[in-house]
Length: 471
Image: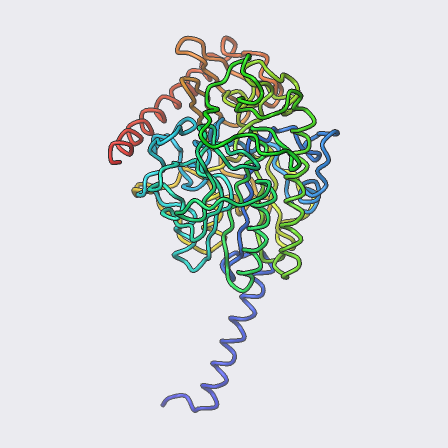
């Protein structure tokens, strides 16, 4: 005999109550499947490991970034996938080694960009109902066919090439480079301020639905300029060639002879942008349902071809600078902030990389991560358990390659090869400055790391050649 109506009503009510209770408990315990958070990903350009206060800088005033660190999690061992712009951006958006896409150095004018077949964070989140936008620097192809609106972003404002005049918005080849989606649409104002204006507007417009906001700042990449500067670059003038005798009026580095105070101001303007983003989230009551991640795309410049030595960035105690596979080239400042979900004041020494962000976002949004063996299998590791429960990441070996320079990292050990015949081995736990080569003392360990590197290189190089061949 079937249940009577009252009993069925009771059972349905009890079941609903159990589901609500389970959902509330799961959310309180950090289960990320219960609701879809918003995502704000803020990428700085060329910001060094030691450029902000919470990473040891006592000169640059960065109260907003310092606040994020005190209220969230600071990463001491976070790494960009590449020691230069485009490679890191490709890895960030796809969760895969950039070598699989054939992108290993900064993309030049009219070079092929990120291929359409690659699946980006924006595409995955958009297909799940998220509104997506990028404001800032793309640098994954400056041809119209490589525009970010073809890679899952519903709105794009900013520049497609590697650097843009902060006022005139002209690239180093003298071409206009400020876009609204597929159209050139110049705007008046300083890059950092304009991009933040659009980000704040986007947050307000999308406060009632889930969103993914990628704020890819130009700062602190050259040309080094402040909001008070007039436009430096003019349309039709080529600023791409540069040498020590180039007059300031034609220099791609900007209009200033002494760049130290200029870079300091740019860092502080970047920090002001962070404050405005956080304030917008709080104004609309979104802060407790928004995961904010701040990171740099590579290490900072300590000098540019010998010029401005000591006037640009600080990489702290790290060896090397942007472009190097030593720590100064790719160990970068990174901060995660999510009030009520990430315990405040945490500092993690776990090794993480840019490519880990995509699986993290997919996991937090409750989306499936591509499995190993699939065409778009991810190389990154989700940071969710680390962020929400402070649990360690699984052990792994990670790799870098840039213009023949190579590196592999496994736990405390790092192998660096600047050429085919001179592998160096460093113990980063005791030698963060990478001064003492232990390859002769630990030859077996050096050999194992080199063999692991060669296996990785063979795999990604083959896939990268296939990828570029399809374009």
